[in-house]
Length: 446
Image (cartoon, rainbow, N blue to C red; front, top):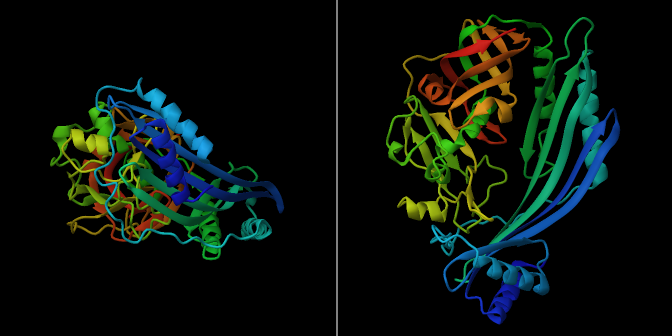
């Protein structure tokens, strides 16, 4: 792929040739190597180099057209600009997207460091060794059906006809292990763990193995539980997956489209327990793949969404910010329609609770480690959920795995029913969060 300055020059020259005065381009290249293994042998080895750009052009009538291409040489860009210009005459007439007012603001500390790529043979060797360690860790562990070790380099850029030019690069390495047990007369049990880092050399594969083993073994002795109302503790990952499933709560585009649990009037309202604060913080130190700008060139930042239980702001694109008299927040992706999504959640305890709670002393509490079937069990516009989960029932520090059960409730009621947010946060793929205690939720056992 040509470098950003070459693309900027090609775009400018072609735009002048075609008589196009206003355009912007967002693009990225991902160079990725990933492996999976099965009983000591490589099962799947993939290497890919994916690149693409999205081109937007505005015409004299101020309507906009969009096209995407993987071809960024002069000819490819000329064709993309021409196609987007032709499409602009069929573009929407109302609330036409525009440049972000912050696309030309300088950004400090844009990352341009990439880790050296490890050879494929080394990646396979590391994963085969991890699988082997899992298989010998306990006699009941009979397989690691899902596993993966990957490294990727990412380059991104944004430029527009007003002179904005942004570029950044970074590397990510990740490992995923999910083991399965088989014991005579017992149901198969399984558990998994995930780790992420900037480079393969610093990736905590041993920690991932250890967590997978501990979780898997803890599910071997399982029991049925009675259906009823229970005090529930969500693991950081489980709470963040639920928060992500109802992210329309903070999404300004969803609110304007009336596809959200929030309305414009909800800002400043108490929507959760005063113990809870939630930020969207793309630049959090724990965010390994942190991006310094979004698809519109807006710098990313820390956005306070819930402060002491009060809804404080929404996530915006340049367009929604203009319509709601706010500032863009760096959460936009461009395409046929500008979409908005969270970058990296940071959940933390906002206030000192009246009582300290602990799983060591708790009685008849359900600890939910992992939620499943979020695509089917969440009704995002109604606020309700009914989800199968992996977890344990805890009695005074003794953990007993739950054979199978479902947790159900209303998300807005859940937020208000939070009785304790632990101080210690953990890093997960979707953000950082602590364990979150909810007073009472419906659990359906077998």
